Image (tube, rainbow, N blue to C red; front, side):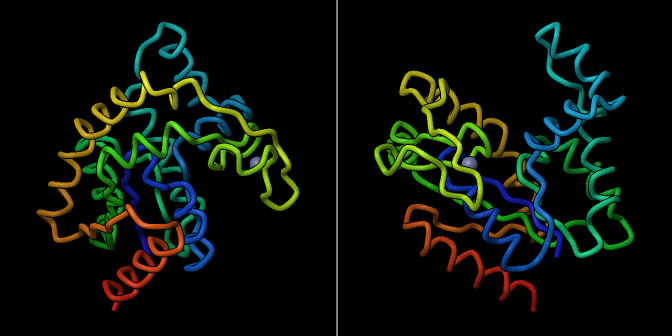
Amino acid sequence: MKLILLGAPGAGKGTQALSLSEKFDIPWMSSGDLFRSHRKENTDLWKQSFGYIEKGLLVPDSITINMVLSWIDENSNKGFLLDGFPRNIYQAESLETHLDNSSGIDKAIYISVPDEILIDRLSSRVVCKVCGIPYTKSDKNKCTVKACTGELYQREDDKPESIKKRLQVFMDETKPLIEYYNFRDKLIQIDGSGTVESVRESLESSILISNK
Ligand SMILES: [Zn+2]
């Protein structure tokens, strides 16, 4: 199963990705984690990226694509779940071409949530300093994932003034992708406004149905 997960900040993508990758036993790649691991290992691709990051420029698609496609080649015997990639049509096309002999990805899943709910969720969100898993403010102050126990804090961009801007950037970036996958009959749209549990259930059942 080769899946892509699309969703605005606050749509619960990280939480759902984790449980989907466990449920269907497929590796999960988050583009943020992938960059961090290249940085940690100081790979050639990281060194190339750093030249751009240092100058405050966007990392060129060619580098990002290279990172992701190498990850796919090394990790995806059983399929994959991509989160944070592709971000534009060019990246999506490169992915489809790379998977050419298997007719591309199976499904792009878009977790759709109305802006009011996203704004509400994001402004009450704290994340683990260590693993990045999100929690709701005042739940607790330490991460409860296995042996993590990282401290929880509110990210600068989860403050109200930054949220609206992020949602706008997300929609500008993602709308063409939604259309792209919809046109290819690969789009599954899930209503992400319910509880974590209910969204998880509808995700799982629509993936199972589409996989038949
Ligand atoms: Zn944690």
